Image (cartoon, rainbow over all chains, first blue to last red; front, side, top):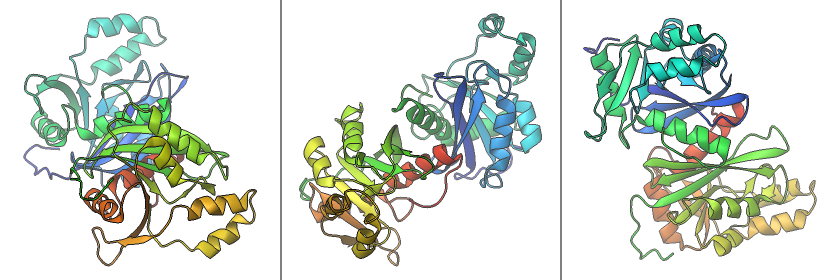
Amino acid sequence: MNSRFHIKPEIRILGIDDSALISDSITIVGAVFRGGEWLDGVLRSEITRDGMDGTDVIIEMVTSTKHYNQIRVIMLNGVTYGGFNPIDIVRIYEETGLPVIVIMRACPDFEKIEAALENLTQAKERFEIIRRAGNISRVVTKDASNPIYMQCAGIDRDGARRIVQLSSTRSNVPEPIRVAHLIATGVVCGESRGKA
Amino acid sequence: MNSRFHIKPEIRILGIDDSALISDSITIVGAVFRGGEWLDGVLRSEITRDGMDGTDVIIEMVTSTKHYNQIRVIMLNGVTYGGFNPIDIVRIYEETGLPVIVIMRACPDFEKIEAALENLTQAKERFEIIRRAGNISRVVTKDASNPIYMQCAGIDRDGARRIVQLSSTRSNVPEPIRVAHLIATGVVCGESRGKA
């Protein structure tokens, strides 16, 4: 996706977040949003805690929904889900044809991540998938004193920044991510908690 | 609640819907909304399919959430949840102190309901709870050719109508109900389906 393309305010975005680590099977929730305005649909799948299946599960979630041909971009909340299940955003882009934007509230500390991965199988492979998400950019959304960070695949930085900014209507993070987080924690824990 | 009171556009509404009947324990989802605009929180509980525990579960859901002191009104999608588990809106109003508005896409057929209840235990008690929701009013929301219907407890008809109309921003039904339905069906079935 090239940023010179017009981005509609109601661009369909699929935001995906995971829930609390309360069992070996972790619920992930997709929120199909129209821009930063309103919820069009809800998806749910399961991934393995600290497993390696997250990328495949997300590709299947995206390509099997009835919303697939309307969705224009996928947003993730970081690149590890369900503990340290690493998400390969380049492969998601290649297999779904949809650009991926990763949202982070803080800039990741790769040394800490690499150290934490040492306790898991396939540590090197996990770290390579995490690094594959590429360069990190700072983005100012609603609150200039509290920027967020993003990585992307299949879309240039300027286009990604514009989509992140137009969809961050209620808080510093895009609505599809904020709402996917509320749903995932709410349905798993009984009441939503924390911030996306 | 008296309709002469000012109703803020961002009045906190808890909309509750149930999910598909796929087991004996039926998930119900609460969506805490600011008027018809945005989602503030998500709640989840379980009721028994065709049981008698729905009213108690909803009272517990409402009074135990951190949003309790912000919520000003509860909205239900009909008065039977999880099959024929009847919801006593007068008792919810009395025990939570919050008015209740019941939304229906079509005017209920009480003869049909009474006949269906004959296959269940406590049929008479269920029917009395259903009748206790009181008179039914027609309300025009977004589409004048497609009115919806409501019942209420703890609030006068004019006030209830104004809240239903201000919160029906995206479709003919109030957003808290539309979104609770998307979440409940999405997380239980894997993808949201049907209309609230």
